[in-house]
Every structure is written in structure tokens, then in C-alpha cells.
Length: 104
Image: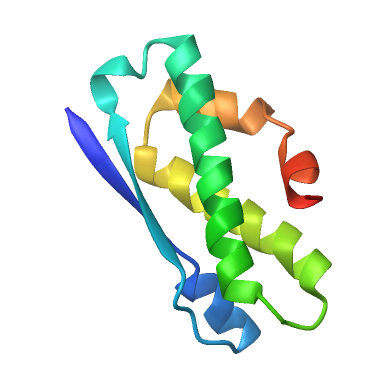
């Protein structure tokens, strides 16, 4: 079963008092969530999508760097909740790529 994740930074941006126009969609193959390679690949795609969405949403914002880190963490965390799979959630909780990806 394929599930589509919708990335939007509206909730995050609202908390910062900004309007959000950035969004992205990813497809998740729920039948493949038992495969560790797929889980790792999916998590990397989510991080990449979060980075893209947050960059678009925060372009030109004051304190860009610190807001980017917060935005990416918030967006990835929400995407992991949308996937709603125990193995994927466990992988995500152990992942430490946020610092690396946010520093780009």
C-alpha cells in the first residue's frame, strides 16, 4: 500500500509568525517498511524534503540558521508521525543526521 506524505511547514511557520507557501509530497510504500534499506532510504528522502521545504519557507528570514535546524527537526518529526510505523519510528529516533543536513 502506498501512502503519500504531505510536507508543509505551515504549523512551524505559524509559530514564527510567517506565512507558509512551501510544500512537498512523498510516497511511502507501507509494504516495504520491513526492509531496513527502504527505511533508511525513506528517512533520507524525508530529511531531504524537509530541507527543501524549510529552505523555501525560511528564505530571507532573520536567524535563518537556527530556524532551519528547528524547522527541519519539526518537519521530520511530523513526517515520521505520518508514516506511523514502529520500525520506522525506532529508526528515526536513533538517526542523528539533522545536524549534518541542517548545516548545508
